Amino acid sequence: MKSLSRLMVPALAMAALMGTSMVQANELPDFTQLVKDSAPAVVNIATTTEVKRASNPVFRGPNGEEMPEFFRRFFGDQVPGQGQGGVEKRSSLGSGFIISDDGYIMTNAHVVDGADEVMVRLNDRRELKAQVVGEDKKTDVALLKVSAEDLPTLPLGDSGALEVGEWVAAIGSPFGFDHSVTAGIVSAIDRTLPSDAYVPFIQTDVAINPGNSGGPLFNLDGKVVGINSQIYTRSGGFMGVSFAIPINVAMDVADKLKTNGRVDRGWLGVVIQPVSKDLAESFGLDRARGALIADLDPDGPAAASGLQSGDIITAVDGKDVESSANLPRMVGISSPGDSLKLSLLRDGKSQTLDVKVGHWPGSEKNQVTKASDDKQGLGIAAADLDKAALKELNLDNGVRVMEVDPQGVAAEAGIAAGDVLVELNQKPLTSVKDLRDIVAALPTDRPVSLRLVRNGRPLYVALRMRKDAGK
Image (cartoon, rainbow, N blue to C red; front, side, top):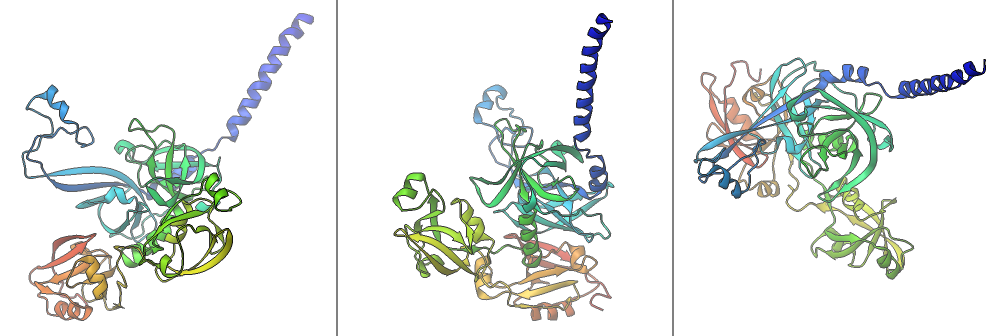
């Protein structure tokens, strides 16, 4: 009996250990249903860009990147990828997801930046040409539009409710392998990156690689809480740290892009720096916090409101500024003309100032002066641009497209919201009235040229009116 009991003790211990392991395994999240529900609304984005070839030989790596000149030692004059002048087409891949059943798609701005053509491949293998409604490089958010209806969409969550340690999953197209699923946890929130002052990034350990950019980050409820955007790497591949744009930030940007084709941020006109422990003590601050004003634009709104060098901004509209990195975001979410109440420390004493924020330098001022609800016969709603807006665009004339009917003539020609129409049928467009009058006289038996500006780049498209257009 004693020998039998000796055998039973380790056996019971092993059984208990296995039971514990099984319980722990059962507690791990199961993403299978999330993937089944979400995958149909995740898309692959392929872009094509025409670039002028260099006249000198250039070696290019597997991703099209230029390689150092010393590679010539290995290849001689026959350098792979060398250019002989002319134009070449470069392609890239990314991810995105559908946010409305009429064809609006979210992705990263860097996925479509500078692209001459954007193609979206759906889960059912349909390929649709997409128009870039707008892109905001400061947050790396872009909004696309395809002409389709009844598309599957993804539910949106609240990124502000995310907690460190929470499980999350990503679906995207790493290295072109579309609808690949990876999972991990939130490793940090409200992360500031050196070159991205306007985004409080979600940091995760979800495996993200080239091609995942623009794809959705999900919580366990299957709701989108972020857009996968960047990785920290020394090798070019995933090294355990990735970053996503919070969906709350992204949707605020998307709404502005959809309405105006661009994002106009509030601006103070200050140069700020972090407050160290020693600086906090020297300025009479209780601890290291806030944003120290090192310099001001003499013509900026901060100077006009009485802010001074040496002021430490400690709160904006009652919200604490814990770090100088927080201030650009807190001001950037405001719109030009908004008034902000700034709490600050000056000469060791606390005080408040009301500041009316201005336009970010280089942004369009008062870009829309009058919108037209008339579809113009083209299937668009357009708006006049005032002199300030035209100056910012470096144009003499033009009208902005505010909305495009996906079934209209303009959509067929590839016109998108945010485009500025400059010339139609070789006649300048100076107002919405001009557009209406010229459209009314367009022939229906042949195409006519339309010159427009999109994301600062001019191009021509051919437009063919239907006999029933505008009826």
